[in-house]
Length: 239
Length: 102
Image (cartoon, rainbow over all chains, first blue to last red; front, side):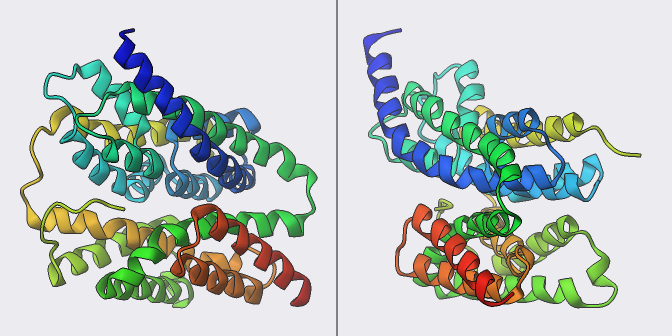
């Protein structure tokens, strides 16, 4: 490893520590939903290590819990993780054009909200060893937290477990509310989505839809409508 | 018939990896279609909103505990609380409210 790469890797390790601490706490709630979906501790750990995605994993666990089809889980994962497509598009512009394909294939693993934010903000072209360092530390926290959620979730009182599982929704809120404050249109989009989602859950007929299908249908229709009503100006990032 | 959990996990991991990797591997220019770019911008907000509501109301035994956790989490996120603060506060509020509205 060249000196430059090992410096970038070590910086990544250091920057990964605060991310790891946050992940450790939040992925605990994910472990609880994995357990509710019938996953054992190994399966939950593998899911977290190979996905590194809160909403995507939560959505997937919901489908597993409802015994949905493989098509449904593929669609749900696609929808819940669609924002990473956007982030990767943005990150692709920050890679040296001669960066070799194996690096590009590995770099995909490191595109989470937090690691993307640091990678995209790093000066100049991205040295892939920087996100590799962050990944090494934060993926450990994410995976360990999830496994802990499965194991300890079993031992805790039901009331405490259900309260802890609410923290996952807190994480979702933390991801969307700050932008809703800045941007009135996005605020309207969020409130409309929640209202329609509430309606779909109670309306006769529609309420028999699985929660996965509800998410897919509403995401596609509301996002398409929003894109037609207010197209974005330049390439925007998802943060 | 029940699908093997490992098959589900394989599909999840494969789809997630492809979403993140394809643009890095094949995209050397910005996306041209304004509609696609706009659509992709709004998707995360809609998805996370739909996954949060009404599910948060049903996450605990009491709808009111879930509603209070939603309000507390949204208020803290609005005032700039960090991810960890918002997530932890929503949990604490749900726990305390669950003790009141049993």
